[in-house]
Length: 478
Image 1: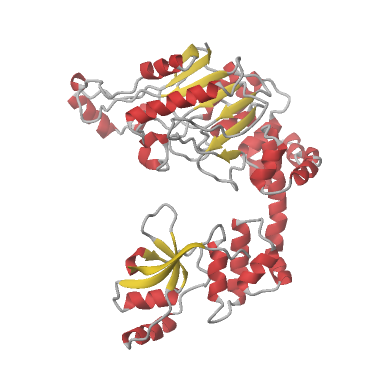
Image 2 (image 1 turned 45 degrees about the vertical axis):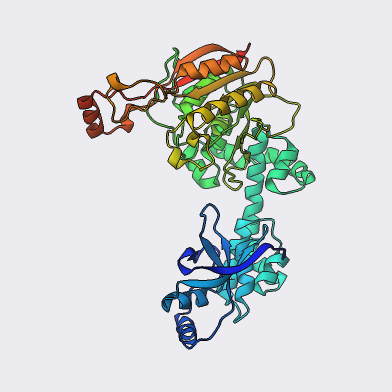
C-alpha cells in the first residue's frame, strides 16, 4: 500500500474547520464513553498527539479527519476552539484505507467494520488488490477475497458491459484500456467475446419482452438496449420506434427532455434535438465528437441511432460514464487550448453544446466557462473554433448550439441597451472570423414553462421581454 506523503504540515487550525466525513470514516460509530474519558483528560491538562486531516476537495479552509475522531470530538465538547493538526496530502492513496490503517492502532476493527471497509474500498477503486486492502484493515488476503468475491464477479460483468458500450461508440482499444485501468491486451481478449454478450438481451427482445423490462432485468442502460432493438433499421425507422417524430422544417420545439437519454444535468438538452442533428447532418456509423458532453445525451443518442461517438467533459465519472473521457478546456496564458487526444481519425460531425453564458452558472463546476466574464467567454469560443478547425476534416460539419443572452430580468424591454448582450450575431461573427461558414440556422427554442405563472404575470406588468431563443447553427469550413 502506497505510503508516500507530500507537503505534510503541523499547525493549529479552528476545530470548526474540521469535519467528520462518513464516506472515509472506518468505524461504525464514535465511542462516546471514550470521548468522555478524553474530555476529562483534556480538562486535567493532558496533551494528546495532533489529529491528522487532509483538505476537503473544492472546500477551501475545510479539512476532513483521517485519524483522531475521538480526540477531535473531545476537543469540541470541552469548548476548545483551536487544535494542533497534521495536514497530509495522501498523493493518490485512498483516504478510507489510510484512515482504516490508523484506526487499528488503539483497537482492532470489528469483523463488520473490516468487511464494510474492504467492500467500500474495492467499490471506489476496483484496481485495488486484496493484499493492499488487507494491509490497511489488518486482515489476510484470503479473508479480503471472501469479503469482496461477489463484488469482484459483478465488476467483471460490469467491465464487460463498459467495454461493449465504449466499443460500440468507436472508442479505440488503447483509450478503453487507459480509461478502465487495464492492459490493452485484456481489452483485446474481452472484445473477442463481445459477440455473445448481447445474446440474452436479443433473446428477450425477440420473445416480446419490452425494453423497460429488459433494462430492469439485465441492468443495461436504455440506450444500450435500444442499440440492440434497432439493429439493422434505417435512421427514419429508428426515429419512429423511439417515438420522436421528425420535424421537417427549420424549427424544432421540444418541451421536455427524453429521460431515457442522458443524466439529470444542469442545462440538459433534449435527446430529440440531438437526434434531429444526427438525422439531418450525419450518416449511420459516422464519427461524432462531443467536446463538452455533460450528462451524456449525445453518446446515448448516438447508440440508439448507430453513430460512433467520442465525448469529453471536465467532470470525470469513470464508473457511470466511462465513455465520456475527462478533459478540461482551459485557455493557457498565450490563449491556446489543448486537444484531448492524438488520432488519425477525425470526426464527421461535431456537436458543440457548451454551458451558455451566465445561465445556470451556479449549478456548474466553478471552472465552467459559463461563469467567465463576457469578454473571456467570447475569447474562449474564438480559441475553440480555431483549434477545432485544425483537428477535423475539410468536410466535417459543426453543429453549434447556443442561445441569446440578455440581462432582461427586472428591466422593461424599452430600457434595455443591449450593451452587454451576447446574441447570435456575436457567435456568427466569431465563427466567420475563425473560418467557419454557416449552412443552416435552426430555431430550437427553450420551453417558456420554466417560468411560473406568477413570474410571467409580473413580467407582463413591467413589460419585461424574456428569452426562450436557442439556435442550432450548422457550419462547414470556409
